[in-house]
Image 1 (cartoon, one colour):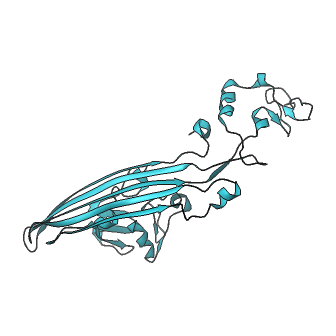
Image 2: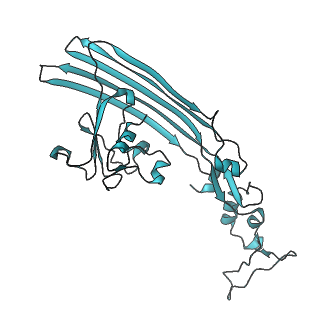
Image 3: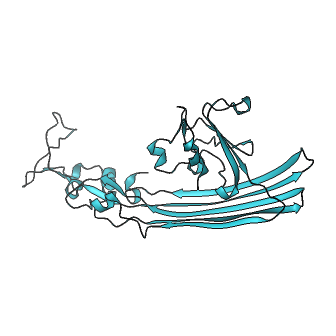
Length: 285
Protein backbone atom coordinates (compact mmCIF):
# COMPACT_ATOMS: atom_id res chain seq x y z
CA UNK A 1 0.00 0.00 0.00
CA UNK A 2 2.99 2.30 -0.50
CA UNK A 3 3.31 3.40 -4.12
CA UNK A 4 6.86 4.64 -3.53
CA UNK A 5 8.01 1.03 -3.40
CA UNK A 6 7.22 0.74 -7.11
CA UNK A 7 10.00 3.27 -7.72
CA UNK A 8 12.47 0.52 -6.82
CA UNK A 9 11.62 -1.10 -10.16
CA UNK A 10 13.30 1.80 -11.98
CA UNK A 11 16.98 1.54 -13.01
CA UNK A 12 19.36 3.22 -10.60
CA UNK A 13 16.93 3.21 -7.64
CA UNK A 14 17.95 1.36 -4.49
CA UNK A 15 16.26 0.90 -1.10
CA UNK A 16 17.53 2.91 1.88
CA UNK A 17 19.79 1.70 4.65
CA UNK A 18 18.55 -1.14 6.90
CA UNK A 19 18.28 1.37 9.76
CA UNK A 20 15.54 3.24 7.87
CA UNK A 21 13.92 0.11 6.45
CA UNK A 22 13.55 -1.51 9.87
CA UNK A 23 11.26 1.32 11.07
CA UNK A 24 9.36 1.32 7.74
CA UNK A 25 10.50 4.85 6.89
CA UNK A 26 8.58 5.94 3.78
CA UNK A 27 9.87 7.85 0.78
CA UNK A 28 13.58 7.33 1.39
CA UNK A 29 15.48 5.87 -1.58
CA UNK A 30 18.89 6.22 -3.18
CA UNK A 31 18.64 7.31 -6.81
CA UNK A 32 21.74 7.14 -8.99
CA UNK A 33 24.04 7.24 -5.97
CA UNK A 34 22.49 10.30 -4.32
CA UNK A 35 21.64 10.41 -0.64
CA UNK A 36 18.28 9.00 0.45
CA UNK A 37 16.91 12.45 1.33
CA UNK A 38 18.09 14.29 -1.79
CA UNK A 39 14.94 13.60 -3.80
CA UNK A 40 11.98 15.86 -4.53
CA UNK A 41 8.32 14.92 -4.06
CA UNK A 42 5.46 16.74 -5.77
CA UNK A 43 1.72 16.27 -5.26
CA UNK A 44 -0.50 17.80 -7.94
CA UNK A 45 2.48 19.91 -8.96
CA UNK A 46 3.03 21.34 -5.44
CA UNK A 47 6.12 20.77 -3.31
CA UNK A 48 5.33 17.86 -0.98
CA UNK A 49 8.68 17.50 0.78
CA UNK A 50 8.81 17.58 4.58
CA UNK A 51 11.60 19.92 5.62
CA UNK A 52 11.13 19.09 9.28
CA UNK A 53 14.29 17.70 10.83
CA UNK A 54 12.23 14.93 12.41
CA UNK A 55 10.39 14.00 9.19
CA UNK A 56 6.98 13.82 10.79
CA UNK A 57 5.36 10.42 10.62
CA UNK A 58 8.66 8.87 9.48
CA UNK A 59 7.88 9.94 5.92
CA UNK A 60 9.83 12.23 3.60
CA UNK A 61 6.50 13.50 2.25
CA UNK A 62 4.16 15.83 4.06
CA UNK A 63 1.11 14.02 2.65
CA UNK A 64 1.19 10.59 1.05
CA UNK A 65 -2.16 9.82 -0.63
CA UNK A 66 -3.61 6.36 -0.27
CA UNK A 67 -3.34 4.15 -3.33
CA UNK A 68 -7.09 4.45 -3.90
CA UNK A 69 -6.81 8.24 -4.09
CA UNK A 70 -3.94 8.21 -6.57
CA UNK A 71 -4.50 8.86 -10.26
CA UNK A 72 -0.87 8.29 -11.27
CA UNK A 73 2.69 8.93 -10.27
CA UNK A 74 5.89 9.30 -12.25
CA UNK A 75 9.51 9.08 -11.20
CA UNK A 76 12.26 11.02 -12.97
CA UNK A 77 15.71 9.63 -12.24
CA UNK A 78 17.83 11.78 -14.59
CA UNK A 79 17.79 14.49 -17.26
CA UNK A 80 14.80 16.24 -15.69
CA UNK A 81 13.78 19.65 -17.01
CA UNK A 82 14.44 22.98 -15.25
CA UNK A 83 11.07 22.96 -13.46
CA UNK A 84 12.42 20.08 -11.33
CA UNK A 85 15.64 21.80 -10.37
CA UNK A 86 15.52 21.59 -6.58
CA UNK A 87 16.88 18.06 -6.05
CA UNK A 88 20.14 16.35 -6.91
CA UNK A 89 18.44 12.95 -6.83
CA UNK A 90 15.18 11.93 -8.44
CA UNK A 91 11.74 13.53 -8.64
CA UNK A 92 8.52 11.70 -7.70
CA UNK A 93 5.48 13.46 -9.14
CA UNK A 94 2.05 12.22 -8.00
CA UNK A 95 -1.50 13.31 -8.82
CA UNK A 96 -4.74 12.77 -6.90
CA UNK A 97 -7.73 11.38 -8.79
CA UNK A 98 -10.58 13.53 -10.01
CA UNK A 99 -14.25 12.72 -10.49
CA UNK A 100 -16.00 11.94 -13.76
CA UNK A 101 -19.48 12.03 -15.30
CA UNK A 102 -20.45 8.81 -13.55
CA UNK A 103 -20.18 7.93 -9.88
CA UNK A 104 -17.41 5.41 -9.17
CA UNK A 105 -16.26 4.24 -5.78
CA UNK A 106 -14.49 1.53 -3.84
CA UNK A 107 -14.38 0.26 -0.27
CA UNK A 108 -11.58 -1.91 1.05
CA UNK A 109 -9.84 -3.38 4.06
CA UNK A 110 -6.49 -5.16 4.20
CA UNK A 111 -6.17 -7.36 7.25
CA UNK A 112 -3.18 -9.24 8.59
CA UNK A 113 -2.59 -11.10 11.84
CA UNK A 114 -0.22 -13.63 13.38
CA UNK A 115 -2.47 -16.70 13.33
CA UNK A 116 -0.55 -18.44 10.55
CA UNK A 117 2.85 -16.89 11.35
CA UNK A 118 5.72 -19.03 12.61
CA UNK A 119 7.44 -17.87 15.76
CA UNK A 120 10.29 -15.41 15.35
CA UNK A 121 13.79 -16.95 15.36
CA UNK A 122 14.95 -14.87 18.33
CA UNK A 123 11.75 -15.48 20.27
CA UNK A 124 12.32 -19.20 19.82
CA UNK A 125 15.92 -18.86 20.94
CA UNK A 126 14.92 -17.00 24.12
CA UNK A 127 11.91 -19.21 24.85
CA UNK A 128 9.49 -16.32 24.33
CA UNK A 129 5.99 -16.43 22.89
CA UNK A 130 5.21 -15.59 19.27
CA UNK A 131 5.16 -11.80 18.74
CA UNK A 132 1.76 -10.22 18.23
CA UNK A 133 0.97 -8.89 14.76
CA UNK A 134 -2.32 -7.25 13.79
CA UNK A 135 -2.78 -4.80 10.96
CA UNK A 136 -6.01 -3.24 9.70
CA UNK A 137 -5.81 -0.83 6.77
CA UNK A 138 -9.20 0.29 5.56
CA UNK A 139 -10.94 3.05 3.66
CA UNK A 140 -12.84 4.05 0.59
CA UNK A 141 -12.89 6.42 -2.36
CA UNK A 142 -15.71 7.86 -4.44
CA UNK A 143 -16.09 10.48 -7.15
CA UNK A 144 -18.73 11.83 -9.50
CA UNK A 145 -20.18 14.90 -11.23
CA UNK A 146 -21.47 18.14 -9.75
CA UNK A 147 -22.30 19.59 -13.15
CA UNK A 148 -22.13 17.11 -16.00
CA UNK A 149 -19.17 17.66 -18.32
CA UNK A 150 -18.09 20.72 -16.29
CA UNK A 151 -17.59 20.20 -12.54
CA UNK A 152 -16.52 17.03 -10.75
CA UNK A 153 -15.85 15.97 -7.16
CA UNK A 154 -13.76 13.26 -5.53
CA UNK A 155 -13.08 12.15 -1.95
CA UNK A 156 -11.05 9.41 -0.30
CA UNK A 157 -10.40 8.25 3.28
CA UNK A 158 -7.94 5.72 4.69
CA UNK A 159 -7.27 4.54 8.23
CA UNK A 160 -4.52 2.35 9.67
CA UNK A 161 -4.41 0.49 12.99
CA UNK A 162 -1.39 -1.71 13.62
CA UNK A 163 0.19 -3.55 16.55
CA UNK A 164 3.49 -5.34 15.99
CA UNK A 165 5.60 -7.11 18.59
CA UNK A 166 9.32 -6.64 17.92
CA UNK A 167 11.68 -9.10 19.69
CA UNK A 168 14.49 -7.27 21.50
CA UNK A 169 17.37 -8.30 23.74
CA UNK A 170 19.68 -6.38 26.05
CA UNK A 171 22.68 -7.41 28.13
CA UNK A 172 21.97 -6.42 31.74
CA UNK A 173 23.81 -6.84 35.04
CA UNK A 174 23.29 -10.10 36.87
CA UNK A 175 21.50 -10.16 40.23
CA UNK A 176 24.88 -10.40 42.01
CA UNK A 177 26.37 -7.53 40.03
CA UNK A 178 23.38 -5.35 40.92
CA UNK A 179 24.21 -6.11 44.55
CA UNK A 180 27.84 -5.06 44.02
CA UNK A 181 29.28 -8.59 43.88
CA UNK A 182 31.60 -9.40 40.96
CA UNK A 183 33.52 -12.45 39.74
CA UNK A 184 36.31 -10.32 38.26
CA UNK A 185 38.59 -7.84 40.06
CA UNK A 186 37.08 -4.44 40.87
CA UNK A 187 39.37 -1.60 41.94
CA UNK A 188 38.67 1.47 44.04
CA UNK A 189 39.21 4.47 41.73
CA UNK A 190 39.22 7.01 44.61
CA UNK A 191 42.08 5.52 46.64
CA UNK A 192 45.74 6.09 45.73
CA UNK A 193 47.16 3.09 43.88
CA UNK A 194 43.67 1.87 42.91
CA UNK A 195 43.59 -1.13 45.26
CA UNK A 196 41.09 -3.94 44.73
CA UNK A 197 37.97 -4.09 46.85
CA UNK A 198 37.77 -6.87 49.41
CA UNK A 199 36.45 -10.35 48.71
CA UNK A 200 33.73 -12.41 50.30
CA UNK A 201 33.93 -16.05 51.41
CA UNK A 202 33.41 -17.21 47.82
CA UNK A 203 36.33 -15.16 46.54
CA UNK A 204 34.17 -12.59 44.77
CA UNK A 205 34.97 -8.88 44.81
CA UNK A 206 32.43 -6.80 46.72
CA UNK A 207 31.76 -3.05 46.56
CA UNK A 208 30.53 -2.07 50.04
CA UNK A 209 27.07 -0.52 50.07
CA UNK A 210 28.36 2.57 51.90
CA UNK A 211 30.48 3.36 48.82
CA UNK A 212 27.49 3.42 46.51
CA UNK A 213 26.35 6.75 45.10
CA UNK A 214 22.67 7.06 46.12
CA UNK A 215 21.63 8.26 42.65
CA UNK A 216 23.45 5.38 40.96
CA UNK A 217 21.84 2.94 43.38
CA UNK A 218 18.37 4.18 42.36
CA UNK A 219 19.27 3.79 38.67
CA UNK A 220 20.61 0.26 39.14
CA UNK A 221 17.41 -0.70 40.95
CA UNK A 222 15.42 0.17 37.80
CA UNK A 223 17.29 -2.34 35.64
CA UNK A 224 15.43 -5.66 35.34
CA UNK A 225 17.11 -8.98 36.11
CA UNK A 226 18.10 -11.31 33.24
CA UNK A 227 15.19 -13.51 32.16
CA UNK A 228 17.00 -15.91 29.80
CA UNK A 229 18.34 -18.80 31.93
CA UNK A 230 22.10 -19.13 32.03
CA UNK A 231 22.78 -15.71 30.47
CA UNK A 232 22.84 -12.03 31.34
CA UNK A 233 20.22 -11.34 28.65
CA UNK A 234 16.89 -9.62 29.20
CA UNK A 235 14.58 -10.56 26.33
CA UNK A 236 11.33 -8.73 25.64
CA UNK A 237 8.81 -8.18 22.87
CA UNK A 238 7.63 -4.56 23.11
CA UNK A 239 4.62 -3.79 20.95
CA UNK A 240 4.92 -0.96 18.44
CA UNK A 241 1.55 0.74 17.94
CA UNK A 242 0.87 2.73 14.78
CA UNK A 243 -2.25 4.53 13.68
CA UNK A 244 -3.24 7.08 11.07
CA UNK A 245 -6.28 8.76 9.56
CA UNK A 246 -6.15 10.66 6.30
CA UNK A 247 -8.48 12.00 3.64
CA UNK A 248 -8.35 13.90 0.36
CA UNK A 249 -11.11 16.03 -1.17
CA UNK A 250 -10.83 17.43 -4.68
CA UNK A 251 -13.08 19.50 -6.97
CA UNK A 252 -12.33 20.01 -10.69
CA UNK A 253 -13.99 22.59 -12.95
CA UNK A 254 -13.56 22.84 -16.70
CA UNK A 255 -13.63 26.52 -17.61
CA UNK A 256 -12.95 25.91 -21.30
CA UNK A 257 -11.74 22.93 -23.30
CA UNK A 258 -8.15 24.06 -22.72
CA UNK A 259 -8.43 25.58 -19.23
CA UNK A 260 -9.16 23.61 -16.10
CA UNK A 261 -9.25 24.69 -12.47
CA UNK A 262 -9.07 22.42 -9.45
CA UNK A 263 -8.79 22.66 -5.69
CA UNK A 264 -7.74 19.92 -3.25
CA UNK A 265 -7.65 19.63 0.53
CA UNK A 266 -5.59 16.86 2.14
CA UNK A 267 -5.43 15.92 5.81
CA UNK A 268 -3.28 13.37 7.60
CA UNK A 269 -2.90 12.57 11.29
CA UNK A 270 -0.52 9.79 12.31
CA UNK A 271 1.00 8.48 15.52
CA UNK A 272 3.68 5.90 16.28
CA UNK A 273 4.55 4.56 19.74
CA UNK A 274 7.70 2.43 19.76
CA UNK A 275 8.47 1.32 23.34
CA UNK A 276 11.98 0.63 24.58
CA UNK A 277 13.34 -2.91 25.05
CA UNK A 278 13.67 -2.40 28.83
CA UNK A 279 10.59 -1.56 30.88
CA UNK A 280 9.84 1.76 32.53
CA UNK A 281 12.69 4.23 32.98
CA UNK A 282 15.40 1.59 32.77
CA UNK A 283 16.11 2.38 29.12
CA UNK A 284 16.93 5.96 30.06
CA UNK A 285 14.97 7.49 27.17
